[in-house]
Image 1 (cartoon, rainbow, N blue to C red):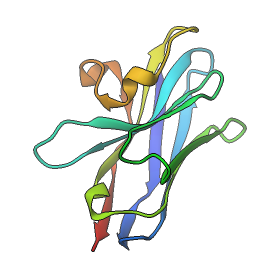
Image 2 (cartoon, one colour):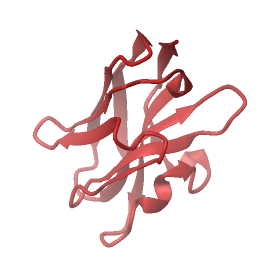
Image 3 (cartoon, rainbow, N blue to C red):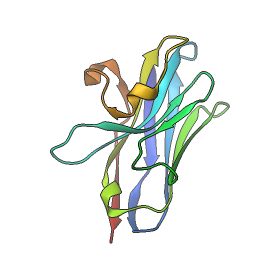
Image 4 (cartoon, rainbow, N blue to C red):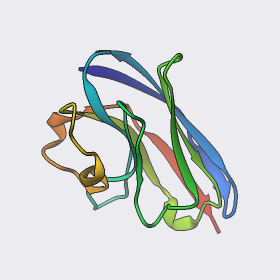
Length: 133
C-alpha cells in the first residue's frame, strides 16, 4: 500500500486557480489508479482526475475536462492537480487517493463514484477547496 499526504487548497474567486499536491510514500512496485476525488456534504466521493501510475494515462470527469490537469513527478513521488478556471460548483473537500490495480488494468472506471468500499483505497487527509462567485 501507499501513504498519501496532501497540501494546497484554499479559497479563491471564480475564475481563479489552485494547485493541490500529494506526496506518495510506500509501495513502489504495484500499479495504481491514483488521483483526486472530491466530496460535498451529503454526497459520496467521486473521482474527478485519475492517473494510471504505470504508463501515465490520465482520465477526467466531464465536469473538469479542459480546466483540471493531473500530473505526477516520479522522481519526487508527488501527484499534482492544477485547477484552473475554477467555478463555485468545484467547492468541495478534495482527497488524494490510490487504488491498486493489475498491470493491465484500466483506471477509466475510477472516474465518478467509488469503485468499491472506501477501505479498498488509500486516502490522504483531505483539503478544502472553496470557490466564491
